[in-house]
Length: 403
Image (cartoon, rainbow, N blue to C red; front, top):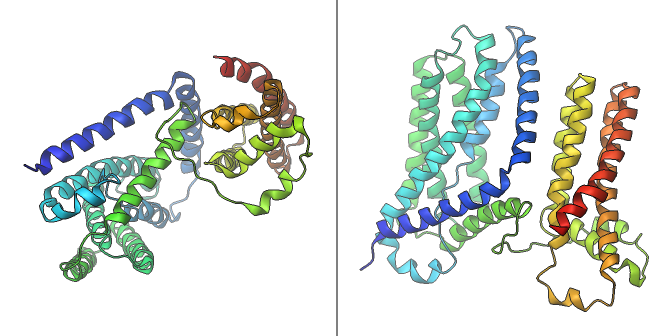
């Protein structure tokens, strides 16, 4: 006999165990130290920035814009699998409890993230407001209620197949969330908040009525669940091999000019393969861009010279460390072993590409510091970055690849 409670328990427990296994690899010792340093540095400068704010600073609007993003993005974690399109569709009417539990677990996880974001933003609010931190738990409870509303509406939207419905819903909910949050933090009259509560109720009820006779779009639910897991697997794959990861390839024709610079010769076979892989497969290029942008912004706003040097080396290390899985990206493809090319060429090609990537990142960091007019520190960052990149590629990476 079908038991939806047992099904949800088995799926959720299995997924949480899977997260736990990969998180142990992600949060390894040296990475935790790096993250703690980055968090500590960010907290120091954030606190100094807050202390320089005037009472006229629009903290409420900034908080509303940021919280609006986290409130609007409200996916439901269903733990569905591809085979469910065949086996569970006939049982859809008996899965109300299953999806209700999925909504609750989604609220718990996303509520925890909301708690962290609110804790980060509250010092800014307390600095410009007379309320201080007194309203923290009141704000949190109200925001959790708004989060529950967003999750409920997001679930009802899954009954539609038109992409335009999803886009308009996200846009409308974002503006509703921003305006409501702004009024909340701006100590607006309770009457205005009650009017917005009525708007929230009417918005949900309108979708509730329209979807009563519709069926769930299982293919879309499963696709979204697979995309969420694929994102997590790609992150975990930067630290350990993930058998369940499916390769994704993007054409990126606009980057072909970089590939065309590689000479068409036998000894450059792996240079071509690794360059193609970096530019097209998975998230290697995206990871490089994200870390470079984040590191560049951090360097631009940090004024402490020695801190800039250390921070640039940390981001170079993070980039290099998370690009090491590129070496094993094709290890399960047998046709690679048929190349009539020495393994020495493979090693040389990988180290050449990694050195070039880290050198480009060092040069970008140097230009950012030079743009601030600190030419001495920019020179130090360039030289230290190139030296660190050389040692990382020729010493650290060789030990890692042999291990």
